[in-house]
Length: 291
Image 1 (cartoon, rainbow, N blue to C red):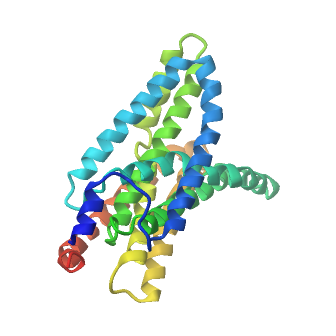
Image 2: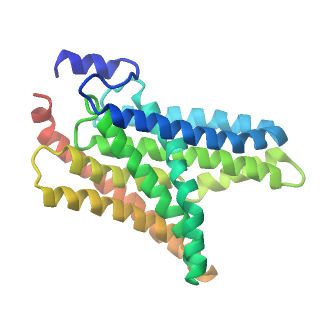
């Protein structure tokens, strides 16, 4: 690697240099800031009523983000990226939220109008959330192309975006659980976090990791035609969207648990397959990409 790339990788997060996709960086910052402002309104309300639950949730979010970052950094796929991973986490927590705000209510209306109530959570949740998270992965790969320029970097960025999205949801559900428990805020908070960690833990990491991997190959592979790039990018996104859609879908009480197990196993298998494929690709293309 050249000196410029090494210096960028080990430094703090700064705006892209001249000639980079500055527009992508600006758009990332604007949408992340907008999402943070929207979330702040919600958390101010929660913090006014149950400040301890918000503080504990925020602390857990910071802790678990650090754990996820550490675990990913131990992988042979990892490349030192300064503070850029924080932008991926921030996009998941805040930037992707903008897409849910803009589209969630409309999707709910469509589900109700068409009589497809069983798909209401899928249309209002899976669609805008996966679009928002995947769009963030694309913008980050464009903005930070001096750092994340290998096909498998989409996998890592996608997982980090998923970490941010999942943890901000946990903080929100935790605060809501604290308010809903009539006896103890702490019990409600603890139960909400426990349920989230036991049922479908890491789902957004799995969804966006899969989508991000396909997107990374589509955008960054050095030797693919347009058709194969589209197949990887669109195919991986549709796979993640389908899994999320099925997870949120109301199959009825009898089929709910079996379907949750099937979908979760499929998500884990999908991410493992992406990871194994990425390791093989890294062994094959790594020396070429570092020339």
